[in-house]
Image 1 (cartoon, helix red, strand yellow):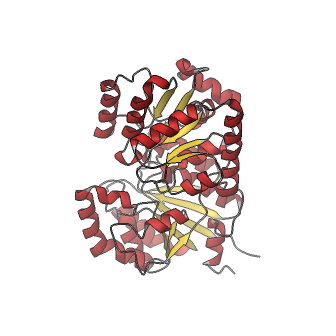
Image 2 (cartoon, one colour):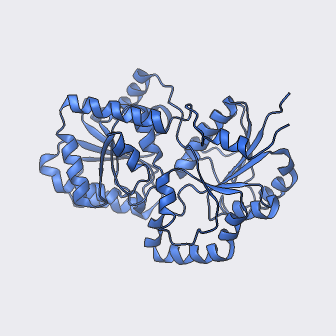
Image 3 (tube, helix red, strand yellow):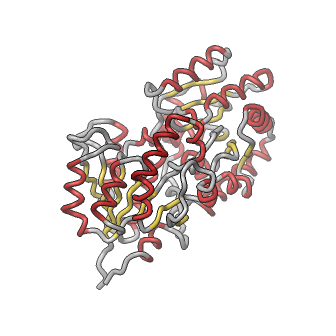
Length: 398
């Protein structure tokens, strides 16, 4: 009788306010569990945390019998040196057949190199995106860390895991030398959401009654320079006289200077009637927002994947985005929306073009969006490069 494969995933946090990896690790872990794997998640979160968003992810994982090991206490933050995490991994590494470290520029990858030798994979989650070279200070810091520590960590790993052909291509344009590091493209995405459409729409319109029966576009994500929120706002300003719809920006509020700047920009451009800001939307509110929207918008300057885009397509909502998003070819090839160059004028053009579409054309784009999701990003449809198959290929289970 074959024994179950034991998988350990190491990630700084499973709090969804930190973006895509904290979201997708939930779906992909449930997918592994449903396929007969044992899955544990080692985090830098503090045990007993009462953060609402964190607790929602925790309950979902535990309800699927996925063990969460929180080792955040007495560390210097989720991404920094953590003696508790180090001791735990040293004492428990022998229990696991396959170990994945999620993310770069953190203690976990160095810890894996020291303790696991070459028996681990690193899921880089777009953290070598060429966009980061635009920030001179960060680029210098990361180049130094790369030269002395991170490159060695990745050379020691069995392979780094990347999410698309676009991300693999972008590694040739990044600010560090990745030659010699083994790379695998992995199937990445989400499970098709199981929701009650009437229920989620009711909850959304209860929170946003001003958007009921109104055409609006949705941005879901962190308020960060890379996301191009200012590009989107400037695009609306360009077409304001001919654009009657609204844009709902939903993301973690109260965290960044950039967030304050774009809210001020909205006021300076007199766009308060066109643009609404909301705190992060999760669970039913998130799905309700997607269903109620006309399309998902992301004017990103550099995006490894774009989880919110995939979530939107899973509910048949088209995409408006730039060619700096690494899944733009899939969106373009399936005609799942519009893709443009990374500048204000180009984004304004596709926004205006989409706003004038007839219902028949909108229905075609909606159907195409779902097909794009089903063929490329639905984790329940197993592909040769799925996480499940990569695990099986790289271990021998008696």
